[in-house]
Image (tube, rainbow, N blue to C red; front, side, top):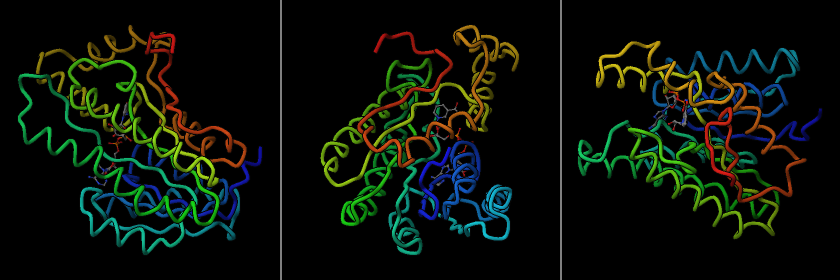
Length: 266
Ligand code: NAD
């Protein structure tokens, strides 16, 4: 299926691993020029090699170029420089590391402020830098990675459960504002997936309870009707579809990809 995005330019944040990297690989296979950032240059170089290889599987020597920048999404100047270096962006994936795990009594005020900076401020900043240009050019796709916590609070993930719904509010607001400009704005809300973010959650749970890795996995999968965690490629496939030409009438949504974990009807 031709997704109609060959030759477009994508900017993907937090892309040296996990969902960002998986999405970059799929976009490269679609012939998209990908610009990646994450905090560490070494991991990014490895990621860029993988993304370039994915593009070459389909396009050979004609594969689109991949560029990288070591950027922390909470650093306003570094993000502005990264966007300027990338040039006009058609496809934007707003992604960052997740806020730390923790419950109500153990989280300090500074952790709430840091989580706001990481989760909300970084998303607003990227959109301010990229979306008006998309609207001027009359075409754009924005996808933000959130979490199932936008639908249902997740045990011991209070910062995510409180702040992620605000990102969905940003999605909905921008979607309406830019609907007539050819720009769609959506979110993908992942359930539990096999990435290093989940490895950190497992380590935290073991530290708190003294249980084993298998105990944690058994507890989660018992709550997931599909009986397994998702793969980052499955999540990236949803993001890539939302970025396609064919998804042009779909905006303001938060698509949950969770193997059936959320039990609500809407
Ligand atoms: P991951 O740990 O596999 O990858 C995170 C990436 O973000 C890495 O490349 C890391 O270098 C980069 N990163 C982290 N903080 C950054 C910062 N401040 N600036 C720039 N880059 C930064 O994680 P993932 O599973 O791909 O998670 C991506 C997002 O999805 C996170 O916000 C996570 O909380 C959320 N999420 C993940 C799951 C899951 O099951 N994996 C579920 C729900 C939500």
